[in-house]
Length: 234
Image (cartoon, rainbow, N blue to C red; front, side, top):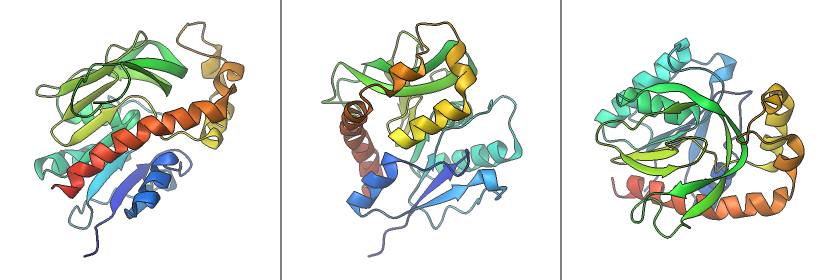
């Protein structure tokens, strides 16, 4: 039996799904990437996909572009159809907004490698450490929608992740590769100039990158695997 693919939406120069793509390939799970930065309209058909992944990118969901409006409409329809959605960074903010949450500017930029506190002793983040390091690059934060379960927080953002039924929102990035981190540093260097304990400089971000990304992928294997279980069980 052929498995329907995941549909992954990219917003920045056809941003790669990074390690998420590697993970899916190792699992033998098909996926396709829709590059919305190329002006491609948001496909609204859900019959031919197993789930949606909304990646990160610049922008404010409270001042949505046409493609943001299209994505949020699609997310809302997917939720009604019980089709699993994974929202990452901007994608997580969209998911919160669609579910009735509030997206606001964070108290500070959060950039670099920062620990999050695991608030989920069972379920999504079960068996993960009480605190684990992830990669961050965001200026906004989101509130917990009604009926959702908070999964993680940090000193730089009160809510880092939540789950709503088979939908998962993460403000942080588990998919980052050394190449995608280098791209962000180059493209958004001005973000690193903010004086804050939540913003690291380029030298800190790129130090011991091989070890840090390897540890990140161990966390990703658990989280991505549990989200895929929602698809297998749906």
